[in-house]
Length: 339
Image (cartoon, rainbow, N blue to C red; front, side):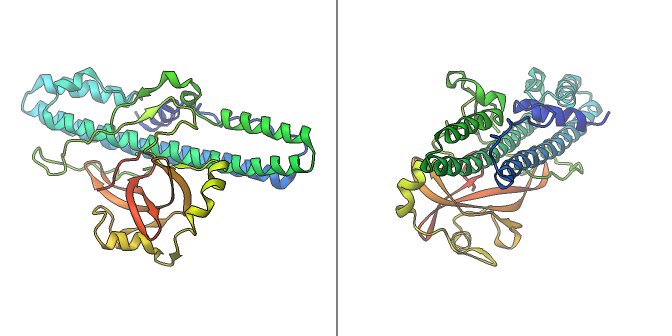
């Protein structure tokens, strides 16, 4: 049975998004064609994020199931029936579209439980990345709608300005995952385990003593928060008042040449981040003013390949920039420090 249909639906369900396209509210009647194009671009961004997210989860789950089946065959060969049954339960759950940890996995060998921990780490990492990208798209469209509202207010077109204000609220609410629409007191912590990368689909045999089987680091993943309730240690877009407040202190954005951002290149070359190799960087993202740990910084992202138990995949890292230096390197969306 092909795995993709299960994973595609599960990926959307996990984030509180239906498998059909998002139904965004209709804009005010007086919006121009150009203003409506802003909304179309926003909807397209959400759709592209969902497609990338589905593709990553599909590949990640296929890879994980492939390694579980390899380990199960080894257990059957040595007649370790209890361990084989435990893996059968885990395989069944993943193939049915349920990525929650199965009780049976606790009876699996240590190295398999370690593999499960790494799976949880990557699974949460991709969800955090999508949440971050969707959040940036929402902040961007809301910033542009806010500008339209201000122009109407200054022109004394108060009714139209109020219509835009109400539309902004409806748009942001309708485009958020269901989990984020719940009140803050329902906050939960997801299993540890963010990129939106393609994982190598070919199974890779890893022996029990493989150096790639390292214990997964715990990752705090907070869900069920409203969009404005970011964790303080995760960079977030600035609100309009924050942009005005910190405009002078932020200064100019980091300079970018054909090779990338000079401040980030210098940081990598000084060895401040070990996991990113300049020669392997595949793409550079835009510089954005964001809030991190309650302070304003410029941030910029890079896309680069990493190798793990689940194969080689592209991941996205973010540099927190202050003046002419990088303060910290983080995985986009999760706030995890990049080694």
